Image (cartoon, rainbow over all chains, first blue to last red; front, side, top):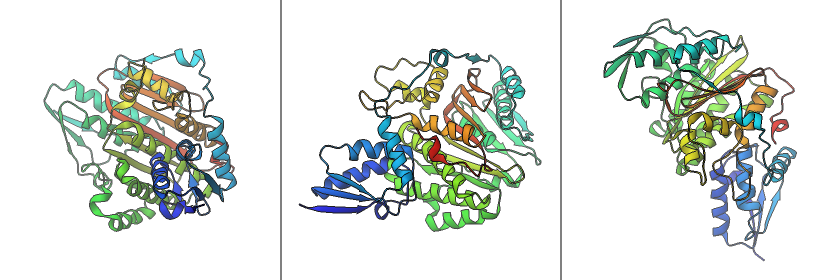
Length: 120
Length: 296
């Protein structure tokens, strides 16, 4: 069995902030042709939710890959859990929010009068 | 027509927006093919004034020129449309930004949005975050929140805007202990992005603004709602975690969010930003803030 360990920070950065990084990593794994891939998060400093969502969808759940994630910090585990739990969760958008109380201004002085009355 | 810009923007976050709206109003009152914005020497401007003005002017159907003697506008590279990191090279860019470590601003940076420049863009954004963190001596918990906020907004530009460049401009206010960060693109607007979605029913900027701020993504996977959390989470972090403010502009739509206000509005049709702009006021005083608490 061909096994490959990928240190994600060596390939990219200690901060993982882009969906495109996850897609690039997927393409690399495809080219590796290894049967099993371990992705090492040991030196990762920071990840965004967008990166983790893309990573989960194009790599972790990819049926063509046999993937193991190693050295995820508790923060990264929490991000991964958040992503997993919202994959098929319908966002609760209330009728009140959809209809809202829209404000429409016909002049800039009206808009500025409204902004001036705000507390921030 | 010469339009005098005398903005002296005060402490209130929305003041910068009011000033830029006033300038837009004057541009629209002029019947000339070309207007000149004449900036007074003693103006005081913020990111929420400068980037919306830049985006508006770039999409304006008449020629707008600038005249100013104010050094600050040169310092922030306003007249040139911002620093282009790829043009000057990584070393020079880093040196240039390092010089800002003792300043209260980072000049306007124009970053590439193509996926072919992912590594370069992430390098540029990381450098900006490091300088911001050094300037205002941010605690690590705030720096991580800031990285999250900037990272999500920049990635939205990359994924949705179809803009060739993104822009970031920041200022920090040491006595007030907050940062103003504004990030913009000159792309297809939120509405343009929704219009590309299969089965789209959103047909105006205000509806697009409301949809984006409710987390309705244009790129969900089939039968899933996995996307659209970036903006929702970012707002929760800024408002609930840091007691800050969040403003978004796109087309003629404006969205305002604070502890008291959660409002989408349609501005007059003469206001049309051909792109999307996000501005955040980020107080950096909450020692207990942890960005991961706000990720859902």
